[in-house]
Length: 525
Image (cartoon, rainbow, N blue to C red):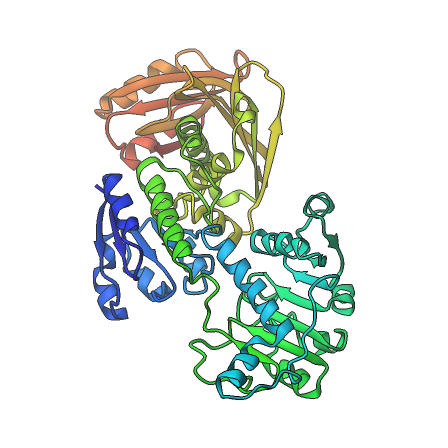
């Protein structure tokens, strides 16, 4: 039975979902770093919000951990590269609080337009400064979106409903998607020059850090109002303060800050500045939604192998998983075979699918090939960390999909580049379930890859099989299966033998010394 730890305060429905899926769950919010590190090795899954820090140090002791689920969007508190290296899937719930965050951005936009916080404080102080608070309408104003993904698109929809014009800067926004949203895609400089309001909806990366820098803030039109409900660090806070004080920026509303909790900040008290304590996702509905989603996603992964909203491996739905599982087994075997035979010499790998395999999600098949291939270098490889290990070794990876169906109704081929040229292996599924090797380096064979095996390349000469059987028999080696293929009579032949026990090096040397033998390698699947 899988075991999950919920280490942050979360809606009780999360634990209910885990238990309904047959998963043991412990709820222990508020653990110290040392307490969490002491027990993390017991768990297959870790469900968190923003308080728990999943660091490299914590992951070093998480030997059974398979998945970390973040109930929310941001994963700044998770060391994703360290998790990937450890082979741990990292998931988030990007849709659970999207509406809530978008609505908060709209609320802050209204607050800036009508100076609501300052007007409230003034009125409750017994003043009646009706002429002091002269606001602006949102109708016909231009809203500039920096980031038009899930949340940004909801903000755009709401803004269009307010009769605003919407322009967006997002390198990943396609022209077709912009048309569907009813917005105009522009470059950043044009957005800065045109927007009356600017709202940010992008992750914090090296590319987006200080995207509203001092230089870019200077490019905005006078009287602009800026809203950030995304991530602290997207705006140069010192430059923003200067812009507010000079009057170039009419107002700014931040829900997020470079340093949080933001109990002190130079922006506090600046005229025209509105602040909230990271409330973007703070609604009852959002907290319930993200708790339910993270529990469902983690349960799918731990019980069925389904992968949803993962940040470090391809998605694999619970519906896809049963169909792909035999293909992934085949792919891992092919990767393992070519890795054991050519591993240290490989500079690139191409994964080709054709026939029925071409109709499936290819990413998990590629991940399985790399997992098998990279296992020659590490014992702790899986589909999560295999692509990272391949990248570290400078391995070039390509995917190829063929619509054709040739000799087999479905086929997966793995081609690697070595100093000797390209070499490929291929396999199919018998009965749509059982993996079979059907081609090894251009020689047709039909073999199951499992357990201990011996790979032999030899000259196709009379009497060789008898001599090989005698040599192995004298050494006490029992042959389980025997698969033979050859290019042509009298030419190069390949033998794949399954054996019951591990074959000693001395026996392999005796086989290599037989006349006509070119290669002898033990294999393990």
